[in-house]
Length: 394
Image 1: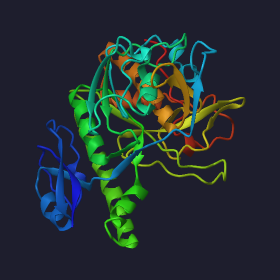
Image 2 (image 1 turned 30 degrees about the horizontal axis):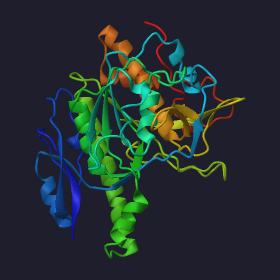
Image 3 (image 1 turned 90 degrees about the vertical axis):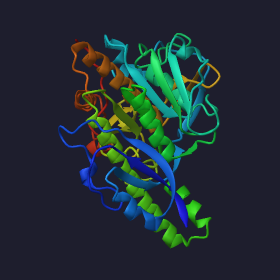
Image 4 (image 1 turned 60 degrees about the vertical axis):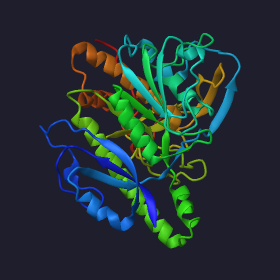
C-alpha cells in the first residue's frame, strides 16, 4: 500500500541508513547545502533503495499536524494597562532594541492583515493549505501580534514592534489541521525569503495518524507501530532540517522557535507531565514552555509540557484578535511568540555589532534566560533555562 512520504534532498554527499544517517548532518567547513523537499507516493519497501541515493538526507511519512490549541480564550473589551505583562516580564519595555531590520516568519493559521496591530508591516503571505491567504481561525493573528504587533487601544502587545517585514506561512487550516510536509516546505520557504526567526505553535497529531491508518483497515496494533516509526522519522527529519539551517549560519542567521505543547495536567496530579512534542523536540529547535504570573512569582502553567529549552509568558496573554481589537489566550502557543520576539531583539542587537549568526543568536536567547522571578520550588526541567530576557544594553 502506498503512502505519502516527505523526501528531503541535498546537494551534499553522504551515506544513509533506512531513514537518516548521522552523517547526513553538515560537517565543519562543508559547502553550503541546498535542501529541497518533495512529497512522494511510496510503498514502504521502496524506502531502503531511495535512501541509498547520496542526495537523500531524510525520508519520513507525512504525518498530520494540529494546532497547539489555547487552553483558555477570552475577550478583552478595554485595555486597563499600557502594556501586556509579557512585555514587562521579558524586559522588552526597557530594551533599546525593537527588532528593526530583522525578518520574522510566523508559520500558523495565517494573519488578519487588516488588523491595526500590523499597520506599516510588510506582510508576505504564502498559503500551504489550499484555503488561500488570510486567517479564518485567529490563532496566527494572535501569535503575530505578540511578536511584532503595534499598540492597540493604547496597549503595547508586541515584543519587537520595530519589525517591518514578516513572512506569514499558512500551514494550518480553518480547523487547525495540516500535515508535516506543509511545515517542512514552509520552513524552507521562510529561509529562502530571509527569515532570521521562525515561530511555530503546532505539533504532530499522533492519535490522528493512528486513526488515519485504522480507517484504511489497518489493525490497531500495526497502525500504532507504524505511527511510532513515523513519529521517530519525522523527528529525525526536523533534526536534519535544523542542522541544514545551522550550516547556513555564515550566510544567514536563522533560528526556529516552537511550542512545547499543552498536554500536561498538573492541576489534576503534579506528576501528570507530558514531554515536549515534535517538532519542538527536534535537536536545533528552541522549545518553549509557558509561565504564568502570580503573587509569588512566575510559575509553570499546569498545561505546559515538560523538558523545554526556555520559557515565556503563556497565561492570560493579550494580543490581536481576529477582526480587530484584543483577545486573551493561554498556552505554550502564546509563550512561543514571546520567545520569537525576544530573539528578534537579540538579532537587532547582534546585527548592530556585526555578530549576527545562528550560533550567537541561539546563545543569547538561551544563555540570557533567567530563573530570577520564578516562584520558589520550581522544577528546572519544567522551565528550561528560565524566562527569556531581552537585551538591555549596547
